Amino acid sequence: MEKHVTHSVSFTLDSWSSRRLQSVERCLDDWVSADALAGAALGAPPDLVAAMRYAVLEGGKRLRPMLVLAAFEAASGHSEEPSTAALRAACAVELIHAYSLVHDDMPCMDNDVLRRGKPTVHVQFGQASALLAGDALQAMAFEVLTPSDASVAPDVQARLCALLSRAAGSTGMAGGQAIDLASLGCTLDEDALRHMHQLKTGALLRCSVMMGAACAGASALVTDALEQYGIALGLAFQVVDDVLDVTSDSATLGKTAGKDADHAKPTYVSLLGLERSQTYAAHLLDQARAALALTGLADTSALGALADMVVHRSH
Amino acid sequence: MEKHVTHSVSFTLDSWSSRRLQSVERCLDDWVSADALAGAALGAPPDLVAAMRYAVLEGGKRLRPMLVLAAFEAASGHSEEPSTAALRAACAVELIHAYSLVHDDMPCMDNDVLRRGKPTVHVQFGQASALLAGDALQAMAFEVLTPSDASVAPDVQARLCALLSRAAGSTGMAGGQAIDLASLGCTLDEDALRHMHQLKTGALLRCSVMMGAACAGASALVTDALEQYGIALGLAFQVVDDVLDVTSDSATLGKTAGKDADHAKPTYVSLLGLERSQTYAAHLLDQARAALALTGLADTSALGALADMVVHRSH
Image 1: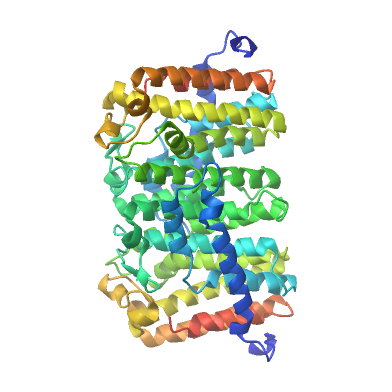
Image 2: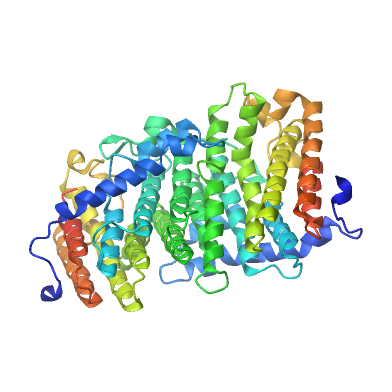
């Protein structure tokens, strides 16, 4: 399938992503801002804004925002400034991701004290503030998707809210976390493990790609192929996550390594072993590339490079 | 102002609300359903659905849904079947309210064990499930507002998501809860107390009315007057809540009475005393009625009766 994928020779992910990362960081900084939120007559309390900023800013690979922008550019053929819709979608999905980490780290969940090399939000601000900051970040994702000016067409706003809410909710990320919780100490077969991951991490990664496609007004054919890419990439992400939990250390990961075995979590490594897990990740990367070829789009370099990065990352 | 309000002589809130309550209960039951959520190929886990259903069904006065439907009917002039948009908005705001109660009751927040006369969600299902059920209910509110069929126009979907996300987030309900948390044991002046309540409970009540107006396509003049009604009603609700915490008992309230004083929470009663708080509630009821008169709408009976009920309720 490789021959169908149009990688321009000069393409490197670092140079592609640097300006786009800057745009995303600037927008997140602007929106999750004490001035913006606390400045209004009925403003947000400064303590809450501080916890929200801590959870969102200065951290993370921003994989989901990059997927939104890469899918938007591939489907629209535009690679200059991202559209307002795509940039808002990119930030909204990151806000959902950030909130999920805050809640996931809490003592009643994973009880983790380290995230991206820093104390987790509840360690820094207390549990109640972490709970509320997460709640407010989820709401903010939908605020960001629904600007009151005319910068994003109402039908695109509605479509983006539909995609993101379903990816975040009980048949998406929150549902996957509930399965994860219920399966501690259990043996899952491969179907059940895949089901859990397709919800827990897969839904939001797939959604990122679909939101980019929606912002570009992509055809059904392109959208379907991009969805297949998103599904393969989402699963690959989790398989590699399970591998890294075994093969890497906390300093490299920026979070506690070896946790899965400590918590008796079912993982791809516990199910398939290390070597077969690595083979499976490579197979999923091929699937993702094949789906890109099916889109028929002229330039899917960034999406291809993001899939490479997901599978070959060290943290 | 009373003379401007068109109360039809035969109107009673009980008869108005009974059929509408049935519609809301049926829709909530359908949407937060094991069949609907767990039936799909990638369904929600049954444990999570059970906790969500427990949090949402069989309980609550459904004040917010009734405000949505009453505002929709007043602004549209229709009083037969509620529109799909209005019914979805009514259920969505209740899902946000339900999620906020689940999180608010958790040990790291109010640590309450009794709600609507039943054990709270974390007591019944554990803290992790309560956290995830609340998270999933917030997402579901936006799922309900964005049906993929053509039953709600995309611009109305977008407007409803915009209103609800802002009312739920850091400059709305979650922000108000953060202020509440930060002000335990503090003395607030009346402005600060009003600010807290306008966010904590007022934002969602105001939003209910605005969503009803949005579903009816109300004019700016009508929307503004209904917003004033919603603001007065929201504040009245909280003043009466503070009064009832002192004057009522746990069995009547369905939740623990006397908690505010136990937790050294600043309240209208602690600030103004009992009698002046009751006078203030009556004054806010007059304000709400005056705002209804300003709408110029032919029939605002249900909105008037809901305001009466909020101020004169016993729980």
